[in-house]
Every structure is written in C-alpha cells, then in structure tokens.
Image (cartoon, rainbow, N blue to C red; front, side):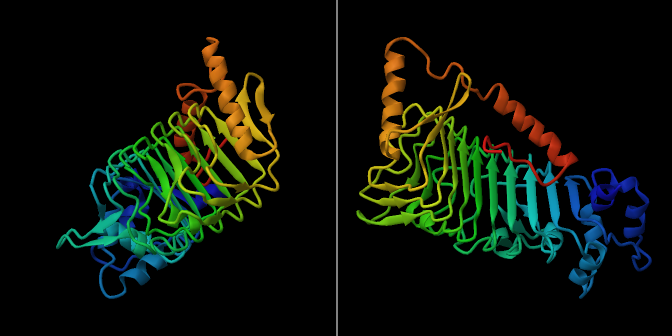
Length: 360
C-alpha cells in the first residue's frame, strides 16, 4: 500500500479524477500529491496539459506544491528529437534526484522551446540530478557536451544507445562526483573516455562495460607521454563481451594506480593482449575472474599485466588446437538478453534497481 502511494503512472491518467481536477480551466487546482516519490510518463500522458494550466509568475512554485516530494521520473516512448521544453518545468523540481529515459527518439539531451525553438542543454539546467539512466535511445548522438554538465551526477547507466559515436562524452566533460558507471550495448563507442575525463573520476567505485562490440580501448591517450592516472576509489571493474577490446589503456608510458581495486572480471575479450602499456599498481588485487564452465574461476600470475597476457596466450592456444574457449560462456542471446528484458519490465513495476551487473 505504501508503494501505491509513492508511485503513479500517468499513461492512463486522462481518465482519472485527479487529472480532471488538475485540468479544470475555471478554478484553482486543489489536488496535490504529497506522498508521490516516483512518476512514470508515457508520451501521451497529458502532462503538457497539466503543466500548461499552471501558468503565471508562480509556475515553479505551483509545480513544487503539487509534486513537492517527487524524486524519480521515468520518461518512455517520446518521438521528438529534442526534449520538449514543458518537461523542463517538471524535471527541474528541486527534490528530483533520478531521471530515466527509455525507448525514445531523442538525438540530443537538449530542451527545445516550442514557441521560438530556443535550445538549452539539459546537463546544465538539471544540476540537481544525481542518477541518470538512458536506455534504448536508438537515435541519441551525444550524452552532453558541456564541461560542467550534471555536476552532481553519481550514477550513470547508458544502455543500448547504438548511435553514440567515438567517445562516451567529449574530453572536456568532468565526472568528479561519479560513483557508478555502466555502459551496455553501445556499439558506436570506440574509445570509452579520454585521458582528461579519466583523471576526473576520483570518486568512481564501480565500472561495468559490457556487450559493446566495437570498443577497442577504455581510456584514450592524451598528449603527455608520461603521466599517472589514479582511480583511488574504484573497487570493482567488469569488462564483459568486448570482442575488439585490446587493452584498458595502450598509449604512452602512463602509470595507473588502483589502490582499492579488489574485483576484476575480464570475460569474452578475445583480443585483449595486455591491461596497459605502463605500470599498473593494484595492491589489493590478487585475482582476475573469468567465467568458465562451472562459474567464475580465479587467475593470477603475479601482476595484472602478466595475468592478462597469460590469459590471452591460453585462449589463443586453445583456438589453434581447435577448441572454442568461449563456448560455455554466457552469450547476448541467452542470459544477458533475458536479464535486460527483465530489467525493462521491472523498471516500471519497481523503480530504483535496474542494474544486472554480474557483481550483484
């Protein structure tokens, strides 16, 4: 009963008495949703009508009055190329923390005015957002381009956004507060992040990159030939089903420091010959996990680079002998696809936990 009070779907709200109260043209709206924490909006939900009736100088105050405790909004099925400006009035509510966008055709995370066509980046306007999930956005070309975009973002999930090209974000983007990064099924990405963006990940604790068939490298090199990058908080790293991945980082003589890293999964990365060209300091790491016939098996050859190189040699020795080292491992058409389908269904039933990382 408590959940029913905290979540509401407006895909069928036009027939609901609350909607009629909100959209009367001849009076002050008296209906509020003090216990509403999560809101799902389909493309035909009628939210534009609700917002447009909250007019005048106190528009933001009125929306805060109606949805004062709203923390999570899910958008699904929008056909516009840019975010309609009327959504900004709702998404800018001060208590909103989490934004999910599913199965829509947005090309850019930009609000566009329906009156004069003026465009404003969502990453700067929605500075209060701490969790962003973008899933099945088939036309999305960029996450955002602004250096200080989403400054308080702590969790970022990007899944099945296949038109993202090159890098996940431009080199100017900083992720100084990001704690969790998950990228799944984004086939247009070649180098996940650039060297400057990597150096900003000082709070990152978990990174999961999986089923991105064209990724060649996680970090793209910079201009410096000799530098150090420290992931001081990173304790879990998952690299799964990345058939073109050759290394985590291959440029120059960079030193990588992972003082907190304890769990590392490298699975179905057939071309990965080494972890990095330079030194990798991993004082707490004593195993690399690989999915084999009876579950996860531990491998360790004294150092991270030695272990990755040994796994590569073993894998290719098996191929030369006519064996398939991946035949007993999970494939996109079975367990992972099933997990992702369940994730879609569960997101509407139970907002808040849609990750299916193999760490969990």
